[in-house]
Length: 370
Image (cartoon, rainbow, N blue to C red; front, side):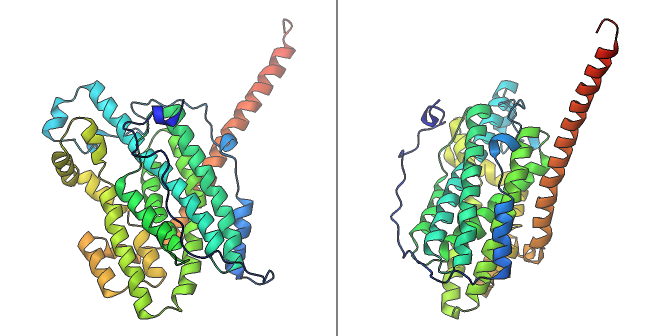
């Protein structure tokens, strides 16, 4: 079924055109490169996988509870609107929230694919071009997977959120080669990783857990790539140049924080926008959710050398400054381990089933009537 037949509300335009800016850079030195980045490139090649095969698409999904979302996690919970909802209404609300979340993941992955391709084009170093080429493939796979999940298992999509679209546009329109790194690798992907992780670690539904675990395994490499490239480059910039990038981060973080309200969902249920925003702001669960979503961004921003007073004050205002002391390396290692463990458990179970089938067939052959 065409995607446009599944949108909860029709997107304003079928194709979003962002004018390209900046230079395409060729590099004729083919034998030099940073060992760390080339090792990451090798890992990117080794870790390629097929979303059609690695994910068990035969698993059933209840579209009215795709993620196992508890009542307390719904922004209407505890409000006058919640008391009026029937069980059927609550199922519809869960469907729309899951659709909205995974639709933003899908749109973000397409944006990541385009930004990674832009990095291949514009970054001056060949080792970075090599790695970005593997990332472009990763992001294409992620968009494919999220698109399939929404089409086949959920049956509903939402257009791209205005704030996410604004940040993507700002990232792509900037002619400086490092801005796709900063906007996508650090901000959008850092926030997406935290969102993916919170759902991965709380859902009891096996299909979305698989999807998120395997996508996060890739994304851990992408964030490591952005950290390496930007940390090296930002050491060379002037204070004025660093402040310009900090301003971009501040604006982007506010946009991303405001992106997470899901007001569009509540408006689709007939709730006026102002009241929908108030419900979202007053939700204790969403307040915690939004704070934890910066768990990957703040330490990464600090690590790459953007940590001026104004940026720190913005994080104080958001209540997330203390996240700067988190260990990104530990979080990324956990992402790798969770995906590998999930694979091991899945394939061990499949092997046990195959062994049982073979033993059953052998036993049946031994019987006189077999």
